[in-house]
Image (tube, rainbow, N blue to C red; front, side, top):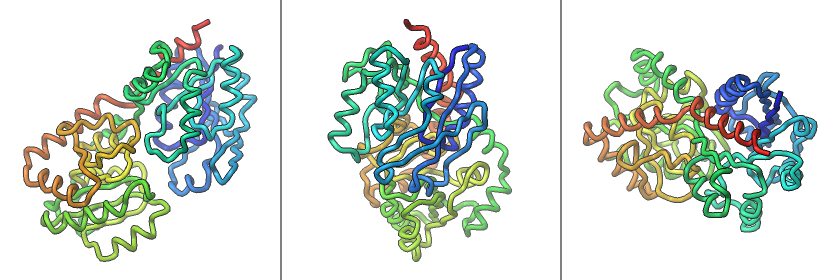
Length: 376
């Protein structure tokens, strides 16, 4: 039986359904699939979004974080040597990638990258990006997050036959089922608990409270929108290093309703209690959470978003505007003053969610894995 290893620094909650689905699909091909992962670095644990993967699929290994979390060595060599194909994150911080790249170049181990292709958030050094570009072709294959990743790889010389676009996703079907199970009475109850009436306009932010999320702009959006849209409220779901700053800035902002970190059904209730999704800072898979709930996404038009921003189509399922509170508030006014437009955007969001999901993503992975394993 052939073996495939998926090597991750840690496993996030949202990734587990995909891994289970891929394991099921590969089992049907008589391929053993394992996920080796360790514990997140301390500042990542603050997000409270790490998960455990039960054996035999999940294999917990020791992560050795170095240089204050800027480098990682994973003790996974036994699992690597037992595998016919190793799939790894592209990140330069993953030190185990370098011996794996050498083995791939020598033809001793099949290795594939799973990733963005480059750092879209411009937080890495020129040297780091140079290393990424240098090693793009040092692997046997690429599981590219999106079509945009594929275009970038081709521009930098990666053969199209080595690229498998997987459309990075979450379990949108499970989210929809969970939302469908939430009654109107539950929605009224959660709104009432926050002092929100049935008719009040409600925007939602759900994500980390970190500098790149521009929580300062988010809170100013709530303040300005409250003055333009009667009864406007902003629900904030999440936590992170900017929590104290957020609480301080929101102290006298009566539009803001902060509920802390929520997961599963508890989180979904707030999505169902909202009309739109507002996210001024960098955004990624959160667009699919919003679309699954039928919430159009309003975000900034800068170029630091994750690849999943490609799923947002202006005028269909959301809009990108300048990262400015006035611009956000004015766009919200445009949506709320035109109920037909808002319903059109909500319908577009729901339709977009249908295009993505972990089953489709796992099937794209399965096809790519089979091609890589069958190559001589």
